[in-house]
Length: 247
Ligand SMILES: Nc1ncnc2c1ncn2[C@@H]1O[C@H](COP(=O)(O)OP(=O)(O)OP(=O)(O)O)[C@@H](O)[C@H]1O
Ligand SMILES: [Mg+2]
Image 1 (cartoon, helix red, strand yellow):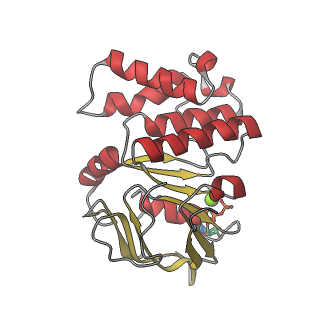
Image 2 (cartoon, rainbow, N blue to C red):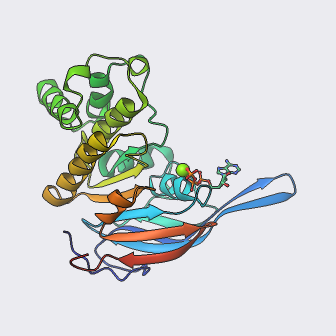
């Protein structure tokens, strides 16, 4: 699998694709402050596959949203491929995000008025450096085929099951071949056959295209393929371990 040499937990690695440094997130609610993340630091080298685990409410989705620049930290920062994203203005952030990240939300976030194919194609069409529409369509169809949806391309989200919508969201995350893919429970609603398809797609991208993957998952099978496992509990890292060779 990919290079396995990152010092687990260290936040200073020079060739890190993702650096998380002293990240805190709290919410003020009247006079009360709810601490969601309590100071998280780690670095992810290029091409590493990281599984983020931990109980419900431990802060996994909050962390992923901060990695994607969809939320702003209360303290600390996130650097993606050397760029500190946490305090960029909207336009600069949108640029870095578009160039660097594919994101799969826990709630899919498909556009209801677009077909599966159009949803997958959308980031491509919004990208100023895109190739031809024919190229984009071919790639969108190939991705939908690879997640088992070749015969659902013209369906609208409401005509798709939860698991099918999840697979459309995955295909969409990969359309621009981003160097980083962040996914929240990408197999959470899939049966074992489709879960295996999605796992294979993720592993192919990780191994053939060198995509850096950070996945939130409760699935021990999926986590078993990761290079590294980071476990959160109550907003803090309790385990950060590399998978030993041959395990
Ligand atoms: N906007 C918010 N206001 C108040 N509390 C919030 C907010 N967003 C998240 N939280 C709280 O922060 C904690 C972490 O939420 P988060 O969604 O990151 O958990 P999670 O680990 O992804 O859980 P799950 O496995 O259920 O998806 C939860 O207790 C949640 O209620
Ligand atoms: Mg979550």
